Image (cartoon, rainbow, N blue to C red):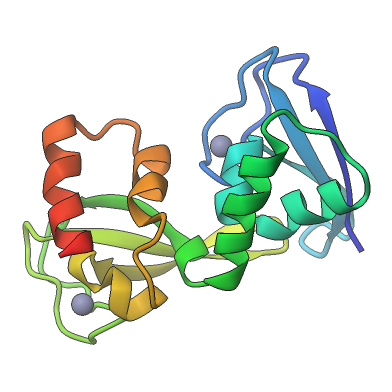
Length: 175
Ligand SMILES: [Zn+2]
Ligand SMILES: [Zn+2]
């Protein structure tokens, strides 16, 4: 069983387990404390609340269920509910142009050609994101059974993409 709590980050040293980026000093962070089999003791994993809503919905839903308070709680709950209803959507992580033509799409099982847009898939396990391959950007619907929230995720987890790149991706994702 995990326990949850929020606090203001007192340093910029913790890393968000959703986006894998640093949590800035002064930002709200949501902690999920649970047994960590990799080190055989309890560990607290930290998240930006929005990243948890997209990537680790039980953390948001259980925290709110336990009476926890968060700014934007209604919006976060709504995002977390979509993520929970579409667990494969919650696995979508980083979007980029394929540097080679070696990966096979997990949705259509065809090769992802060099220079095609692809999105990485990660499995959340014991507080860690485990990489599990790629899908074509155009296979989001086939993989996740929806494209609802897909581009919001892509934007959140790929802050370095330009507006033009996001538009190209949206065309592939939403068809
Ligand atoms: Zn984050
Ligand atoms: Zn595909």
